[in-house]
Length: 396
Image (cartoon, rainbow, N blue to C red; front, top):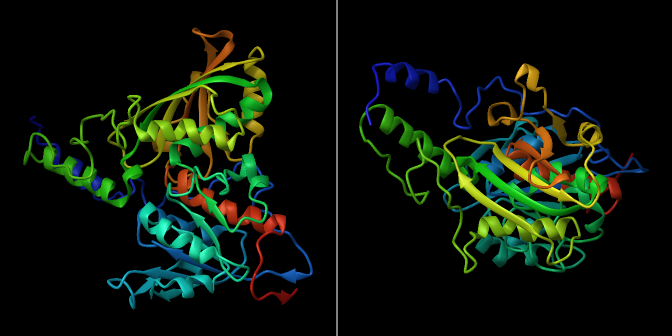
């Protein structure tokens, strides 16, 4: 594969962009509509929470820190837990100042009111329940897949099922693809009653964490510079630059990947649908840094009214309707990156399902709505409901 002498220019331009794929001037906060999630429960006691993060140096952990800097949650102390390699180093955590990384210890983590786990499923399985155990344990919000399918562990998108959290001490954060898609699907389900969901995803390198984004950047440079015709790869099954890979996570006996089945399983659980409710997904990795996109086709029990669908999406918290075809405005990873809201557009009557079918396109930031933001919103929802308790409360 050969490229022109403009390679040097392209590489120079790319160097002015952050590793996350958007310029440092991009806003990482956009809330178009006020949401009940995030409004504090003002009472006689001021709940000043001690919050801990395990995995704060990873892609999701960094975004959790960023979301907490903008959150309504009253954080009196932010603690960062890490490995022996990072313990003792200092980390700038925005308005919380410079924090020394502590060597992870379950007892230390239990001292916090809330712990965010942005780590592997194996780590969560080993430690999450111990951190949350007993009345003196911390509330644990786990970003891994370790507990998503446990019947006694809530799987939460706060705008949809915050009521499922109740007094739970361990809460699972959903898969990024599911969380992004459900922001659009749930308002439509309330209005038209979904009967079938078919999804095809276009998932950014960020879904594989910082290592995935780094591999995409390095591989793109390899090919553009002429160093290699096909980029090196370790994180992904094949080279991702200038390619798409219809393979995310391991293949299962039914021919779907686990990533695809996560969408099926989690949609049913979060939306309280039947165990056999038909949801089908094809997940594809594409060479963009961050923000996943999805084509979603639904069949509904009630006939679709496009205007009513638009209105429902315009009013839905966490959703931004971008559907102005005349001016070529529609959801894209480029515009969804760094934004809190999920972009939804390309609404149209389905030619397959007719009057009871709708097709749409969705883009959402995988590291925010699909991970860090959703986790912080869970804590905010618990605070608002009064189910999040500070070990030390001060009189307001």
